Amino acid sequence: MARGIIRVLWAYRTTAKTSMGETPFSLVYGAEALIPVEIGEPSTRYTHATEAKNEEELGVNLDLLEERREATLIRMAAQIQMIERYYNNKANLRYFKIGDSVLKKVLLSTKAANAGKSNPNWEGPYRVRGITGKGAYELEPWMARYYRRTGIQSI
Image (cartoon, rainbow, N blue to C red):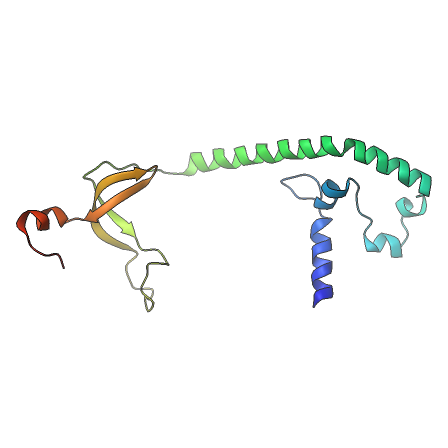
């Protein structure tokens, strides 16, 4: 079991990620990893490697490592901007005013333990009593004003 996890982690760390354009291994150590297959089945990269060439290449890679990390950060920031733009184009945000009537979505955490498929997905109606933040509202039951004026206890 542990041996399988180690192999999965190795595969994850030596695979280039779309968001970064680099492998996590190369960003940490400054060089591409030799995968076990290359050692067992000698490749040209493995057979032509000498101690001197390896040291020289490691030095060059370490000199360029900071630039590669900066380029990765820029690439990740650009991808975040693209995702934000896509969300902002697709999102249909609604802002309510105090006094508007709304329904409240029943979330998984607020659903009854035995709630099935046929239970309602919305509860209410509610009236917006106050605005507590960006997209957050203080709600009161729709008839609460009536109950307060008449002195009737709500159900």
